[in-house]
Length: 247
Image (cartoon, rainbow, N blue to C red; front, side, top):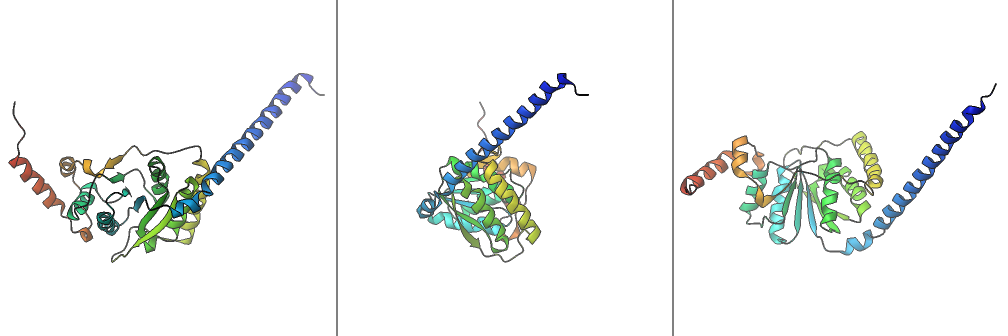
């Protein structure tokens, strides 16, 4: 026997399902339109001068390279995504007499995928159109493809700038890893049209607290030629020469 009293609940359930499907359809259409509107600006962005360098962590050679490159382009912003310890990067730039005010350190990323997830909101906030992606040949093609997908979805043209490596970079490539990361990148290209993940740990290079780093301890890759012990000793000598004023 049927139970007439149950028909309203069945109707409401079906109505809710239809409303949900329609809402998802509208969301997908809006997201797709927004994504397409960003992608069609890429040819124009490609003609725009390079207005930022994005450095992927994994080898101090990349930071050495960008510190030298920045000396030739002092007004171009630099974003280093989870690179070497802050004092190591600071000393590399000081060694090349490179301006520090245009350099930012993003320290939330823990993978190539999150390098781009956390970098994109900053680059978009800076109104960047064209970046040079600074990484190593061993990081290709995965890093470049991911950058082109995630950043390209926000109208940012990506141009690779490869750094010669003498040692073994921190990243390891494989077909499976590339496939998984590209899948995540495509999904995020859609999701990021409505959701942005902001990094809460972004430091401007000129604001690096050497005193605190020396207290906590840090290390630098030998290829950088930066000696942590020497940095902290020089800092200590400077404080002795200029003791705090006593009131």
